[in-house]
Amino acid sequence: MDYIEQMEKLFKFLDFNLEFEQVRSIYNIKHAFNNDLNLFGCFIKDYLTVVNNKVSDDCNLYCDFVLYFDEAKSKTKENEIVKSIFNYSRYYLWIVFETPEIKELETLINTVNSCFAMDTYPCIMRLIDDYINQKIDGKYFSQMLQFLLDIVLERFKNPNTKINFNDIINYKINFERLVG
Image 1 (cartoon, rainbow, N blue to C red):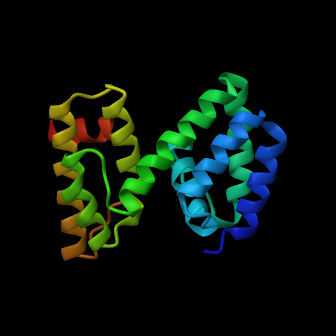
Image 2 (cartoon, one colour):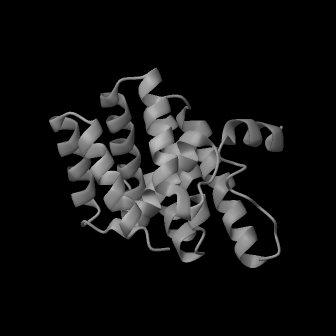
Image 3 (cartoon, helix red, strand yellow):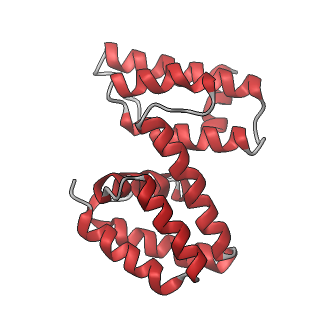
């Protein structure tokens, strides 16, 4: 999908709605994406999947982001929104470029990308964020990594396997239900 036009509009929107330092942070994120607006658009789609618990339509990314931003701004400070975008963009780049700062992620990320399971990115990003922010412990993190790895490999072996990773985005509930 070509996200260039929508991401250009998104950056203009942020220019008008954020303080100078926050805009600078956003442009630093853009730079981390090598100014690739399509890659940044893919990230925004996955980020919105995490924060909204639903997949945005490719044609509505800009509108969905504006709605998210306005709603989030009514609940939290803009600095927190920018910080969240920054953190998730970092995780996204770890996955895309296979350069995680958490060694345990290497096998999962390599497998996900080898099996073209990009629909797992939002789930992995949320898992990383919960682990880094100590919402889950190391044991749970390791179990979830193995759980996702098993699902990705099963689906790769049997493409008819119906698994929607967007349903797993709230993995704690789903994982506990599946493993007992």
